[in-house]
Amino acid sequence: MRNFKKLLAVLAMVCMLTTGFSMITYAAEGELRFTDPSTTVGAEVEVTAVFTAPVLMDQLEATLTYDPAMLKFVSGDSATGGNGTVTISGDGGSATEASFTLTFQALAEGDASIEVSSSSGVDAVGDPLDLINGSSKVSVGPGDPSLIQEEEGQEEESASMEASANGPQVEVDGQQYTITSGFSDALIPVGFVRGETQYEGTSCESVTQEASGRSAFYLTPVSGGEPDFFLYDSDNGTFAPFEQVELSADRYIVLLRSDGKVDLPDTYQETTLTLNGKEFPVWQNTEEADYYVIYALNADGEEGLYQYDTVDRTYQRYVKNAASADSNDSGSTPGGIWGKILSVIRDFLDIIVIVAGAVFLALVIILIVVAVKLRHRNLELDDLYDEYGIDLDEDEEEEKPARAKSRSSESGKSGPAVRKPAQTAQIVLDDEDDFDDFEDFEDYEEEEFDDYGAVDLDEDDFEDDYEEFEDEDDDIIDDLDELLSKQPKKRRGHMEPDDTFKVDIIDLD
Figure 1 (cartoon, rainbow, N blue to C red):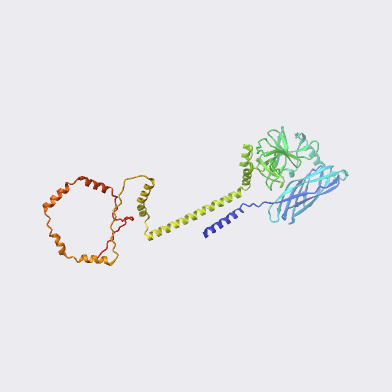
Figure 2 (cartoon, rainbow, N blue to C red):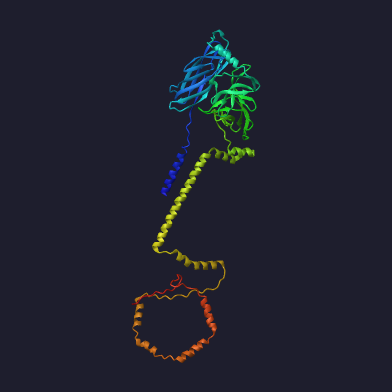
């Protein structure tokens, strides 16, 4: 029993340790935020980019984009660029916060935005940082345009950009756009490469995802505004807003508009979600309003559903489990106590499986221990029977007649009368006086037996007596045969345990 308790203790420790094997270490989450300053036309303005993380940071890098018609990059800390793109590449200083100052000159009135096209970072121990990107909004008011100085070659570049904007015009959500070429390489989304795509017989510059072959055009609003990429559907010749969301250093998703093939449970209702000023159709979970399901294209070129958590702002693949499918097919979900039980089972399924496995393993160990103990007990009983000469087979054979007689009397069935076996005489010699009688028996003289020899047996008399014996009625013999046939057969050389009298043979010599 003590060994069994030790086994149970070891089993419990193993179950507790196995729960820690599935732990996964995730990258630390940091943020990249900007200030939102105000300025006037012709004046310079500083925009501060701040990296923050819960761990010490080492290397940081980010690529920023802006409208070159609104702002002109002048200088910055660990920053280089121009013509709509600025790259920050610096050291985090082994701190949890690092800031970089960028200087721009305002070129036109309005609101100019600075967006993050890509960002990455490494902490002090070499693990990657998962950065959440923000944006900056620079408000430009009336000022002195004479302060703006044209750089060499800037006029030619502006003319080239204006000429490149004179491509085919397209309509997206009721607004007119112009397909624009000559965009900077820094604007190309991750996973896409520059190329050319035919649109209504015209070859236009575009970017294409190598994994899926999907293309996007760089469109400029005709009525004025910032150009951006729009995803092109070659099957029906339509455009949709392009929004890329980075999940990790090499993983991303591109939000898509539903193609009508989305099949979700009834608990999800279709609505819209706005990201960076762009609207996309999504499906909100009515039971958990913080979660949305979106249709997207991943880095492998595969289209599918992803779940978006509005609280933590994270994305993960959405898998339609069996429970949701059953509830969708039946049109209703179980309620009451049974529904609560099913909900608890779904939430703690992994723990329930581990506990059930531990209980099953404990039962197997108990069965093995009990089987071994029974085996040892049987072996000890066999040794005990051999030591004392106990024959179970012989005892069972002797008990069979008694059990048969008992069953016959209990069932009430009458059977043929069986005569009990004759009692065997038992001579018990208890005292020494009994042996004296045998000594007297030895004192008899042989002459006393000679008197018997003097008896003359006439042969004729014997024959007469024999003939008279033969004439007796045969019924006597028949009765004797019938009587003897009813006597039970006795085994030779074996004494019945139920006999009252026993014979003890004593050697008198």
